[in-house]
Amino acid sequence: MIAHASKFVPQNSQRIASTQPGNLSSVAFLTPSGKVALIVLNEGTATENFNIRYNGKSAATAISPQSVATFAF
Image (tube, rainbow, N blue to C red; front, side, top):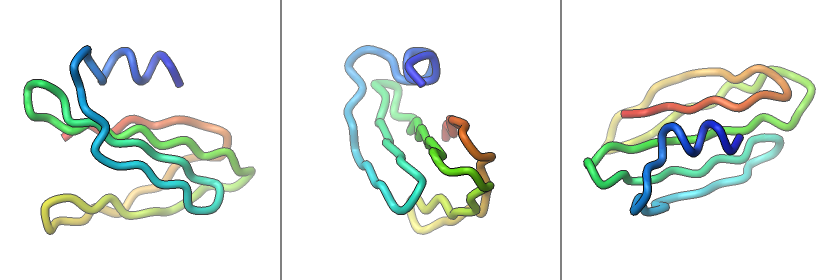
């Protein structure tokens, strides 16, 4: 998980949100360049479907069990 953060979350980024519903944990950062980096961890044993919502838009996605995913936008 640290590798994901170090690649997509540069120094001086600000945490703008975090959640922990069920088996999913997530944290979102606003980078100095104005981009958002969202890191999601699935600690469960099943694939988890979820939606990413930002600025009035939504995207459906899924994450495999026992894995980390990074979304940048």
